[in-house]
Image (cartoon, rainbow, N blue to C red; front, side, top):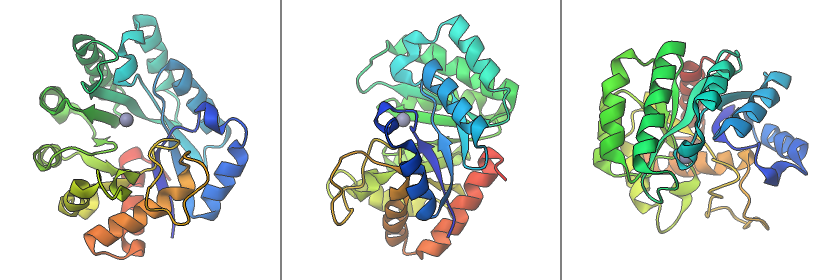
Length: 262
Ligand SMILES: [Zn+2]
C-alpha cells in the first residue's frame, strides 16, 4: 500500500526537533510522498527547499493562505511566482477564502485569491484551495476561472452537500482530512464522503493540525503527523464501504495525476 499525503505543514515549528523521525515514521507507515503546504512566503520558500533537497519524498505548494492575504504584497507575489517555476513546486496555494475569522479583510482575501487563480492559469498548475464559511464567493471566483485551469483540490473539505456538489460540478478534487475521524463534528462529513466519485477523492493529514480523534491508543501529543494518514484512510474506507487497499490505490493515482507526480 502506497499513500500520498497531499497536505502537510512540515515547515511548522513543531517539526523542527524531530523532522527526520517524523519523515521516517511516515515512510514506514507507507506514505511514499508528501506534498508540503506553503501558506505564506516564508513557508512556501522553506517547503520548496525541502522538496528540492529530496524530490523523491516531497513536493510543495506556494501561495498565501487567506488568513494572511494582507501580507501578499506585489513583491511577495512576485517571489511566489518565481517559486512556481521550480519543478518541485507542483501547485498554487494554499489559497482561497476564509470568512470564519477574517484575519485578513474579505475584500483583500478576494483580490489575493484572484491573483492566485491568475497565476495558476499562467503557470498551468493545479490549485491547493482552502474555503471556510465563504462558499458562495469562493465558488463564484473559482467558476469564473475554471475553464482555463488545469484543476485543483478543495483541501480539508468540511462544508455542506451543496458545496460539495458545486465543486464536483466544476470537476475539482476533494481533500479529506482527519476531520472525518471526529465522533462529533465529523458526522456530516462521514455521510458526504460517500458522494465523492473515486477519481475525485484525495486524502491528507494537514499536520500538525487535525490529529484524528479516533486513533487508539490516543497519542501522547496533539501534534498530527503524516503517518496518521493511515487512520484517515481507514475511516474514509469504512464510510465508503470500500477496502483500504482500494481507496489507497485510487487516491494515490489521483494525487499523482493531479499534481503530475512520478
Ligand atoms: Zn487550509
